Image 1 (cartoon, rainbow, N blue to C red):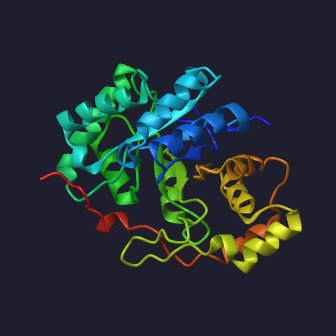
Image 2: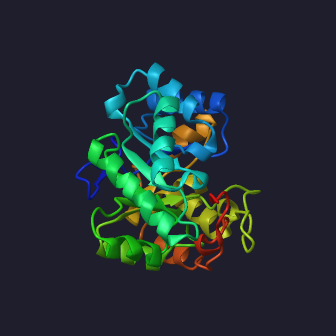
Length: 291
């Protein structure tokens, strides 16, 4: 089945389900992305300069049997490259590594803690969007007050806000705010992260894939816990980018269009909301900030 698409405020569309490649090497990424595109039917790949695997994505895009224009590609600006000229240069570097002359979505990876620099960075992304080298631009990890800063600035609004989001952290406030302003919300660590991925000061490693509520729902539908969680994102109107480099899981993660969670399932999953993160809160994050 074709993955559903969501129309962005840029006028372009984004496949609602994609492949994330965080923590994968270039070689792992190349193999996973090529398999995802050619064998599993993915048309959406999410990488970042900070992941160190843009070259792997680029090699996979070049060797895949699917035309470049049929694959939605996202990459992100790393924190150390925030600022106007720095962001423009970093974008050029990402394009060279990806081996493409445009991306479908370019994101600021973190807001950090310098409002003036953030606005100059957004100026650069707006210029990139106006040039057509990014079909859409957006942000990651922006709280409502960060989004409000761009709204008050005037001009182009982010097409996407990619945030940590899963049943433990459903981000209702961000989702409501973004929806009011025509910004699509995309979920990172949509399965709750990996068992060892808690890296914020108050974060905990993931337990969602073994949570008894999730596994019970999975049993009811004869699906995996990961498939249940991905379905939860889809039915909440979110864009979801589960990461894997394993072919079986890559195929399994996109095999989610032949069932639906019912009201009982959704009400049970809602009880998992405890605000626990696997990553750092954006208001505390300043890693890699330029001097």
